[in-house]
Length: 208
Image 1: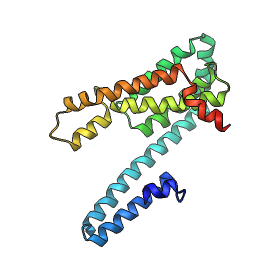
Image 2: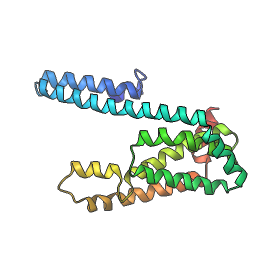
Image 3: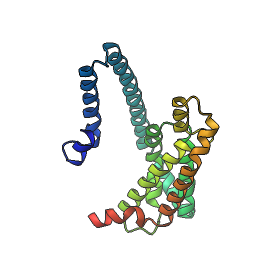
């Protein structure tokens, strides 16, 4: 239902999550494997997660309002351009910051709190791309990649701890060893995207 609905254009991927929940609930009730207690526990867990997300969003909105009033991102962008730092050197520092933060922060909170500061800096630098819009798209793709790396990178890596909590009989050191090949390929992919922006922009250019 979920996959067919997405590829059939019936609903969006976000809406498919709700359809999947409704379908799972219906199947569980019809088969008699889903009791009222289970439904209540699921609803409470969903409410807790939703409340956490909205608190993060509220905090991000307050932070963004502060940045807008103080004009700190614009001032930072002007200062960096005046210092004539190498654009790719600045980009490397920003991506490294995302990897470090991704190891200790929630993905949504990190993006919402850092993007208003980092985005004006990147768009003010000259990376030799066709336009500011292409630079913005390219940087957005890089951010998503490095956030994923940060969530699996030692010594913390929140996703690794989630996997370890599900597979309690597997030592966490073994889990980290299993993650390393994937981490290495992610770093290679990141290096290619930085060195050859066209890899992430060719579809945008075709559609435009």
